[in-house]
Length: 284
Image (tube, rainbow, N blue to C red):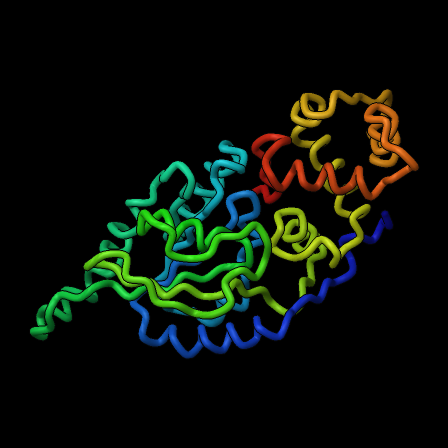
């Protein structure tokens, strides 16, 4: 892995994302509120600056998903950060249902003034119109399915599953417009691109697997050394070196034919599927 891993920008912007961006711009005008989904493991890296620019002064809630995969203590610090900066946010786990029911009540609270003004003008009570946006593989479909308590959208553990906008009526109080995952054209901060690749928001092939694995191993050794030891039962003498770690991995697990790609895939898949433990890559 080269020493300038954080210096070179990463470009990855499939054509369908440009179309999705334009559709968001078109539909956001009629929305009462927007749910901006962030991966709780990477709240900073998964915050799309292009979406923030589109939404501007629109009411929004940042919803941190996949809380069950993130380091709880780090997530608490992110909650505190958002609260101290008066940014509406909520942490959810779409599997267990943590805080799912709070989304609607929190939305109603933020929109109280708007609906009071509509009532004063004689308008009938109507459902909240909400748009859900986020990067690919952030958990939009899983969250929607939990909200409606049934399978309403296609769920997949790869970027780009949702291909088009679709309206979903959750109940008489909330209507939701689902949108495809959208990234921005260029990641100036290469670390952001690495975090997106490690969590499955962009394809692994965008960056060399060796770069991803070496970065992850260094990070785990710095912040989660016990997780690393408990998972692979490998310890090194002296200063940690990812190359030496991969060689030790090769010997311990008797990988044939020096198949380093197999080692890289094993480690990356273990991380993506939470088998190394609850890990947060973005720290406040």
